[in-house]
Image (cartoon, rainbow, N blue to C red; front, side, top):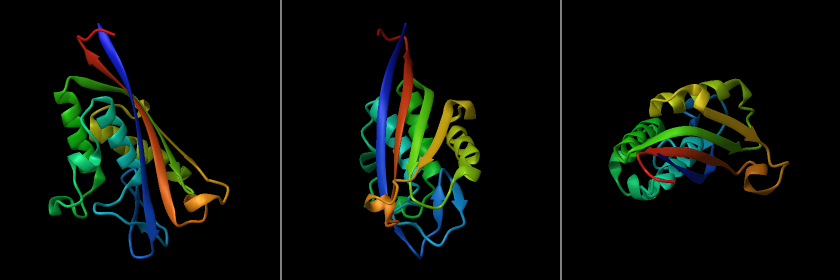
Length: 164
């Protein structure tokens, strides 16, 4: 029998003028980037937290503390690979991922397919198992006024051999 678990992840980062904007592992040309210890990929961070939560692995702050210099500037896709390894080691497999970026700008429609492909590749799953969406906040709040970006992710994982 297969046990299913749902995980939800949320992340937020402030925007700054002296950083690259990395979302879903894609460098997007824009005048601002996200502040953080790693590459600050808010979308991938939300996915990692959702996966870690579903498998009861903790959160990314526990798994990859920002006090550890080993993670300074690291690609979040590398961290996602490690979450995937931990997930599989715990007997879980990803069923699907649904992630939403909250940002007033820039438009990410041209990059969504590559983001889904990057997330899938880091986890060793098919791109069809990953949905990436974006929405503005109609000028409201910190995402609407352009001072930051946020992301939500919901995941479904399954564990073989467990009871529902």
